[in-house]
Amino acid sequence: MNRPKTSRSLTLGVLALLTVAGAASAQSDADLRRENQRLRTEVSDQRRELDAARNRIAQLELEVDKLRRLLNAAPPTTGEQPTEEKVTIDETVPHASPRALLKALQDGYLEAMLDIDPGDPATPDGSRQRAAYLRDLHRWARRMSREMKAPIQWHIRIAGRGTYPFEVPGLMVEAVDPKTHVVLGDPFPVTLPQATVRRLRDLEDRGQFGVLVVKGVLIPQVLVNPDRHEQGLFNRPRFVGPFAEFEFRVEASSVTPPPRPKERPPQRTPGRS
Image (cartoon, rainbow, N blue to C red; front, side, top):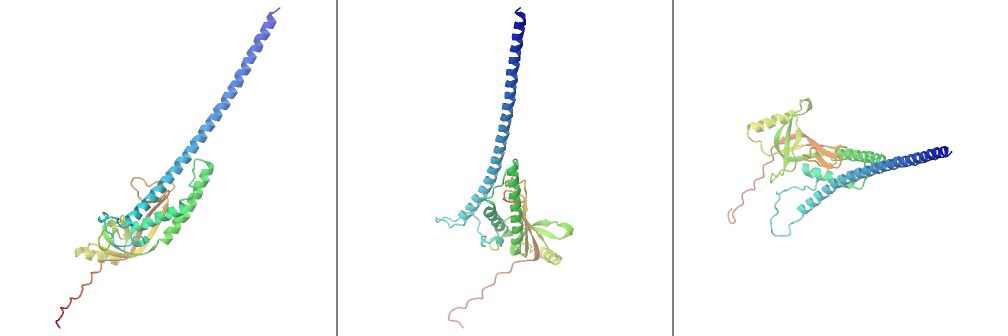
């Protein structure tokens, strides 16, 4: 008589256990999904913070370099002579030398881009921010490439032969201070007219291939590289700021020896006619 009741009780107990187990399993799956979502969000936040930190570090490096230049330009506070090489030209003028041009671009980058959020492509909002940042950077780069194109006259030393498309003759040269011959930046390419090539060959034959004067047009190229967050080990092309780099060439109209210093006329001895 009690056997049916016992069976019914056992069945109800098993059903209760299955119900509890099912609820526990559903709760466990929900907890696992929430934990996965939390981890994905945390990783995305960390990626965004890392990207922002890299961008800020690169910008701070540019600011430190700017402060270092200001300190080097300040007059010495003691009687000691400055240890850096003497430069007689005004490198606060952007077109005074290759390195003055690069510094002007780096300062311009800080002024134009420092307060703009570069975004993080790992997130939907960050991806849109990065795209907007790169659009602004492209506009700035094109404007700088136009505005920095200018006629120049630099003292140079030949660093090597250059090769250019369509067999255009050229040289690799480095700019130097006109008086102290201190090197003023990295070597850069110069394209030459044929008449200038013939004159240079004559100078080389006569052993007058020392410091020369190049006149021509500076052709700058500010480039946007979405994959370059920082300067890197080799720094080629030259790093301007996060995602921006720089190179240039000079289209020469002439390359000639520098003019000889004018000789002073002999002074007359007082009392003699």
